[in-house]
Structures are given as structure tokens and as C-alpha cells.
Image: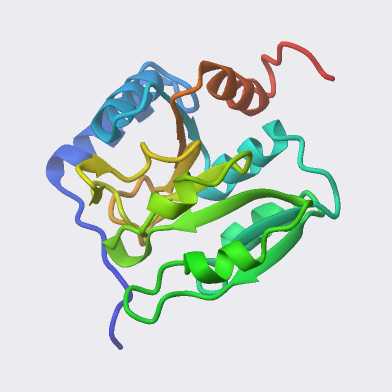
Length: 211
């Protein structure tokens, strides 16, 4: 059997986990905001919100956009099913675009033909560490571009790390990803309003309101 992927776990990793378990802070201890800050600094965004999965990071962001049932989210036909799940959680309509045959990333030519008056966002994954060609996507007006960086932590596009270029980005730290916390995810943005909104939804026991 050929393994899909295998995590590298060092003695330092084991000791770090042990320290967290010994601290009795198992959900949002002092390491969580530190991780959010260091990770967002590494990617080059102002704000980061850690989540339990990458799917949750995307789901919460779509909630902040107030995506309504039947409204459309464009995504590539070749991507992790969890991206599709986040859309269907809201009963929104996933609209599939073709991919480029060379790098397996979403095709702008295909995606642009799928845009309608009901399009609320376009999800642009960076597959297998290869950055998608974001240039034309970022020129689209009034359509949020969401970067899916689950497979491309540290990759760069035109001198900037992916995850810092779109309106928002999400990362997955699932067991098979480049950087893993077992499960886990991260939402990144340069907008304090968006970061606060996602954080408010994440902190279900410390919500500002229940509108």
C-alpha cells in the first residue's frame, strides 16, 4: 500500500502537545492567539482566526457574506469535497468551473463564463502547491475571491504568499496536509470587520449578539 501522506512528528512536537494537555487549556488557551498572529504574519495578512477545520473557516466566512439559499458560489470541478460541503451547508448553489490541464487549478476562462447576477463569490484553490493564476480573478469587481490554500502553505504568486491576495483565504491543517494539527483550520483576511465577524461566529459561547 502506498500512503497518501505521512506526518512528521518530532520530539519537540510531542513535548509541545504535552505542555498544552498539562495546562488544562484545551480549546482557546494562550497558544491559539499566538498561532493566529504568527501564521497571519508568515502569510502576510493582518488578521487570522483559527478554526476546528478548514471547512469551518470557509463556512463561517460564507455566513458573514450572508449567502442566501439558491445564490451561487463558483468553484473548480477538481477540489476537495469539503469545499463543496461548506457551500451546501448554506443551501447555496455550487457552480462548477473547469480546471487547467497543466496545473489542475481553476480556469479563469471557464469560471468567468459561469458568472451571473446570482454569483456571490469565487473559490480559487492552489492545488498541489502550485499557485493559481490570480491576476484576472482579482480584477473582477464586486465578487469576493476566496483563496483555498489547504495545499499551498508558503507558496508565492508574484512575490506574495498565497492567502494574502484575495478578499479572504482559508487553510486546512488536517492530518494529510503540509502543516497539521490533526484537524484544524485558519481564516485569514486583511479586513478587521471580516475577522471580527468570523471570530464572533466561532466563539459560540462568547457571542456579541444572536442576530
